[in-house]
Length: 580
Image 1 (cartoon, one colour):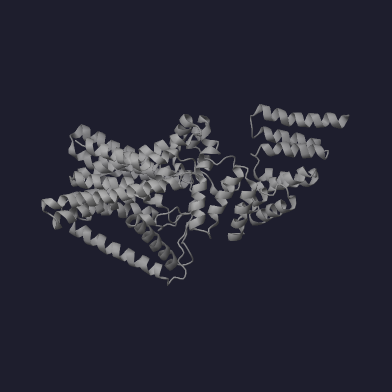
Image 2 (image 1 turned 180 degrees about the vertical axis):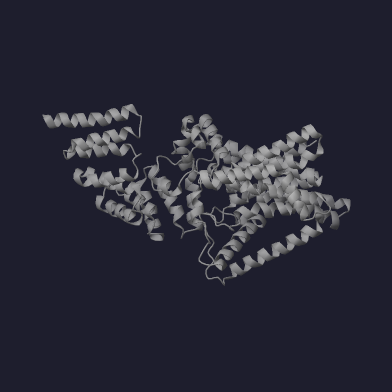
């Protein structure tokens, strides 16, 4: 029945995202996958249900914990499980990771098609809406970034849950129970993939409101009782989310800015930014992490335009809600799904296009419906049907070509960082990421140049000060200056202590290296490589007992017998030399 539509979605999806399969690991992908030990051992699978599952962003950033952990500040074990599976099959080959994202996105477009067809009974609207969802460039960030898989994966489970829910009443008792149970199961999988899926029962309620000719508020309590299992899943997740695996980012959740007006202005600017991206896809670019729209002064025209856009969209949505009954559910889809990313509760990254992955589905279906309705009313004559097809084809073709081009910007860390620096020269994130990439490649002169520019943009970033210090391998004084500045800015930052110890060891001044080694290992006793320098320096100044104590402490943090033997050998060889 739907084979042709699914085949079209598959072929268009291949055209749109085939080039993403050759992309590498980008940005956080390196931190979460490549340089993280968490997913490299099935032995860590048990940590999905242990308290150290979540990543404390402060401790991870400044080297205060044994590894980067799951890479998530929230409890998302289903998402993490996919990374375990990816690493087991593909190791550090990014192709397989991108392949999973690629198929997830195509599956989601197929699910959206089935949901829309079931509700609106129109193949044309269902296909056009799902193709818009598939190829619109606003989805590229979620598809092309391995570390951002949560949005596509949670949408996959959410759409499966919705599809089961809207269909379960169409069958007899036995199949009805299976579909309803499937809706609950997929909802649970979705919420344990990304917490924003918590809004799904509100979407189910919106569907039931849409399905009835009349709906009284008194029916809501009855609806909640009838579907209590959804709310029990939410209660269980919130208990885990808030009590067992607390999200430390919530500690910093506050107004964006000092006043309610500033917060509301940022919310309006973010919303208008998303609207601009949907209706003018050529305006989409790569946004820096944590990007906040510049709203000062508050009277600038962009802020006024943002509030006007919000008011206009509310007016249009309300008007369409009452005028076009068939659109009610999809208007509700967008509004409800947008709430978690609206910054009512401040987000670490106030605006990120990946956040629109699931909410945008409602917008694209509404657009498909309105275009279909426009031609049905204005151009009912048969000759104009070709014009309708031509316009739809043009829109899809334009989005297709744009998304192919945009996917290329996510090719590598180099392409991403150069794009960030070009579009946001006053934001240090692009410079920092490019500097890190140069350092990994051993390109110290290039790293020094880029990180020097980053220090000018933001001299108060401890990580940039440390990274710039590592560039001065041939100038210990300049390196030490940057390391000391990093410690001054963030006294708990581990790496600068080891950097200073390396400088003094290189100079043969072990007595001056020891305080920095001891402080670094006090903050981060899991950094086992530092024990070798610590023991060597203890032995160099004749503190043999302290060297043995350091060896015993190292045994608490590693079971690597070869490494431990090398530590003990350094103690014994130094003792032998001393005795001679």
